[in-house]
Image (cartoon, rainbow, N blue to C red; front, side):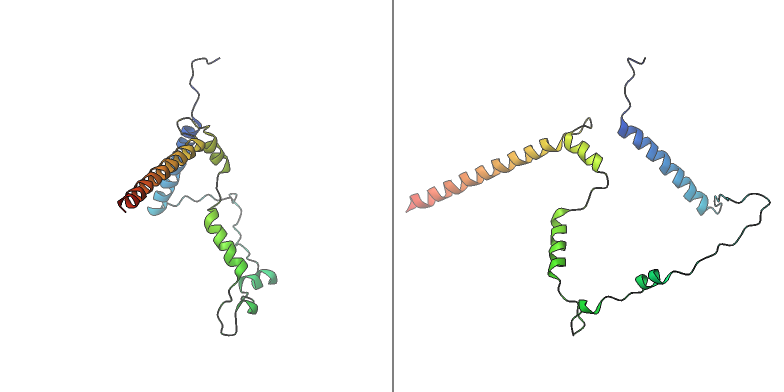
Length: 153
């Protein structure tokens, strides 16, 4: 029973594993650059190697690769028509932002479950309070400016 053993940080463990993987990949790259490629063969000793057989693409794939856009996409001048639904979708995508590649990490960051990082709700509250304080200061400045202008008359 390990009472006084400190729990390992999962982020630190992941960082170490990624650095080991990066070192392995770099060593492979160096081996390839120096002309000593590391090739693993799945062929058994004593058996002749067969040349790979490439199949011709099926007609469905061939038409999908070389298909031209539908003619109703272009107008009589050959210019692409304006598609309102597609334009609206692109506008929404601009405001939506990219999808997360790791939603579990995002939920950890939002909840503040990772030690050493403040939760997003705290950061949002600080930003909101800062914005409210700035608005109040601007309103007071505007009120003072209007009071000075109307008092001068």
